[in-house]
Image 1: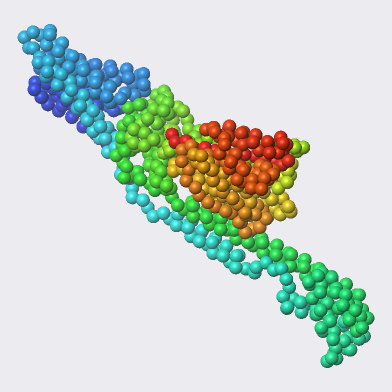
Image 2: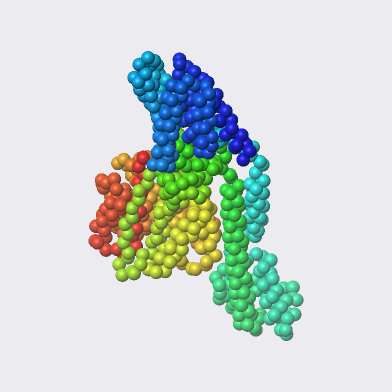
Length: 611
């Protein structure tokens, strides 16, 4: 508070000094400095009083009368502007000061015929006052506001980020340990075959009276016969007839031994199945650990704070906001991934409310960029401290549409879809086709879409979200309940589109009159913990369309090459509306099926337009 009082005292002293500055018989710095100082809230009365005292002691009576009236006009204009608009623009105060000074000079010359005022000098004084007010207002604002703000501290070492990166490396190492464990097995080793043979003979032959004859004689063929018996069970799951006939000559308990061999093998197969299941669970855990490591690395990548380098722009922002009656308490400018800028600021209004549009104009004018507030931002700025986040406006805007048909006789569709905009500048289209139809397929694909939505809204990237979702579906463990996943991510800043396909149908891209097709041969999610995700990228331009379809759309076209037929259908439809395109594609497909829907059909379309 002492520093603020000192600054106001300095302003009063400078105001008195401005009364002594004379140019060509005029005192233009009096109205210019008063207008610039009065635009700043706080200490206005002291500045006005000090300047009136200075004029009373320094100026002649006629000049004092003229400039007192000038200050009165400036005071009235600024107060009226603030009453109407919650703030006063600098150019309004500057014009009020310059015009009143010129008009009062000319009017005084008309009243006092003895001391005629040169009209040219009066006009030049007014122009000088306008220019001086515009310049001084910036200087006064910087002196009163930003000299009180502590310099932006140098960034400290990113200890939290380093800790997260250390944790991520630990999770990756742990994932590698799980991945290097024993692999899945589909057959028994020779050691296991030997143990099973010992188990059978230990149970069946030890108590047999002919054990010595079968196993102690050097020329006994029982070793070879029992080995052949086990091999036949291993390969065919049953006892070979030739081996059984040969063993009957030497073993009177062949049936009991064969039953025991089958029991031992069945138990060994069950143990192998549980062992493979354990290995799969380890692989799922390894994938989840990798996903956790990716999440931590993503959290460790902090956005770059560029407030120091752009301090002048932030000062200009505060000045422009003050003109609109908005006080900026704090502001930070960040450079995000891809070079995009993001502004985070805390603002408030002293009295009443100001629309967010006014703040947006100030932000765009100061940063020289098209900035837009994030979604769900308040439309009015009130007395309390409000936090506003502005992002760069995307170059493109996306529009999307959908058309769908439920399989004949089914109550619900097994296809589910979603349009997501997790943050400014991203448009994500998701389509999942549950295997089969009806409520079971619907629940399966709905679960897939819901998991992806939650992960993306939590800030995961698409690849990590799909990997975690696939792990969850594998652990779910329902047989023959799988779903395809088709994701298209459009970057509305540069027009790039990334495609992620897991067992999905073809995707089509229409650029002018040419239609390209992206195919997929991977397996659906939940089939294996080893995710087979096909990725690709294409560059889109203004007016380009994206068409995603479920399997039922292409499968029942009943043509040798359904993808080529779909390309022809898309090429033949002339429209700039995504919804109309989706509906017309569905109408053309129904012509091929005779108006019937033998399977669930879904068509998603999207188009981008340059703003």
